[in-house]
Length: 255
Length: 384
Image (tube, rainbow over all chains, first blue to last red):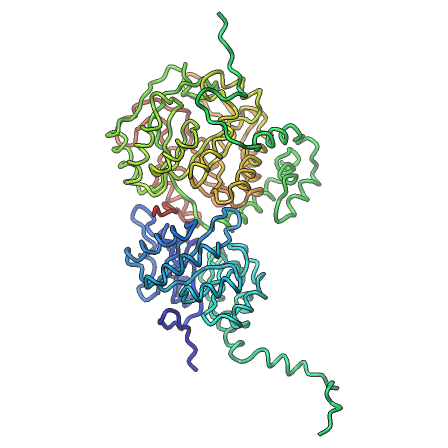
């Protein structure tokens, strides 16, 4: 059975997007391999590590780079970072991140939408990081987003899907890939999101700070696949069937 | 004729007064902070929480928290890793001038101290910047003594502009400025401003800042707000530990930072925790009752109270201490440090501000960070 993820006209077998912001560079390659990730984010502000090091040297060529605009505090800065990323040869994909709160690091949906609109018109494949709000998600669709990336919980919190109900609304209503980004702390939470019909998972802290990062990357990969298979298998129907009452309320009907 | 004593709670000529109630709030809170009343129960309650209140912060800064340093360290490490991952940011200070018009009893740059004074020419400044950039560093902190005459705002702005050619992030640690001057420095390319209040006890402040513009307590206190109004990305706070009651000073610095963050939510906040060190002509200058345990308590309290704020560990501390606190509580450290004027590309031109305790260069620090499974981060900002 073919079950591919399509974003910006590109096909992905893997539904695991790896964040690279909190890693030791030496570990990135092993994590990509064990997690079988095909897309890796790249904080442009860290792209040139200084001295001899460059994170790009550690990411295999067959991986789609997803440069992000972290550090941007408004739409204008995000747009400029994205353009610079393209000039530097990081490709057409861009994850728009706009935050102007240093305490919670929550995405600013309004500025994010403005940046998305400008960048989509310039031909970028725009994947905006957002707070899961239905109206904002619809605006992002209109603005030309290629996917939407709602947060599961505050970034780095490892709390899982504290926005679960609102993400479900996006899954049900928005006709774009929904990628849960931020807040997932364990593979079971990634599995739960995938069971709901989320299209892919992005994760960084939970893997980067694990005792064995390569093994944790593998665990995420497996849980994402398990959740995806459960969704495709039709989890909802199985539960409904088992929950059927032995003395049905409608048993009185004749003919 | 007796010398006129300048009121340390007044603004001097040319000092901008902004509308703000933060100083009153902080001074009232320090007055009410009696750390002796906190017990181990208050500490345990505080440490059982996910988000610490101001009361909790007071408890973990109290003497009752001293037996809980290990628990605090474990909790702080989890917070540090959550917010900063495995990253340790690297930078180095560059002193571009050490002329000073202030008389601050604890500082080697004080006006009456007979030391070699210097101010880097633009050519020498560029040589220094190049030499530092060659070590791989991408973030620099530019420092001066506090002389508006010798190292004026235009001069500092010119050096900041030069620095943008070689560095992605530029901090400044200079005398406090008015808002329009901060805007000018920002436009030249500066990102962060560090202004340490030294002590929040106004009487001690008056005692140790004998004369000069630094004697004005309120002008210094408002510096972070003026910097943020002027467009800077972030501001650093700190008290010079050992000058007065360090628990009260650390409490005040934390509260000051907290109130500024609430008023300016976009501001990036960070802390430094300098202890008093010996300097030329005063070998006995020391941090009194602030030993490593007390210093660590302060650092841990900052981290637990404001987990998202940066904590920097300076070369005032020995290598063995610095190596252990990175990743646990500190997320930023300096390397290849010289606290005299110049000295990176050629002979140092002016004497040091204080004695440092860790002289390792960038590659040695880089190795240490990696050996601990952490990642040295040279750049974390892109200027667009």
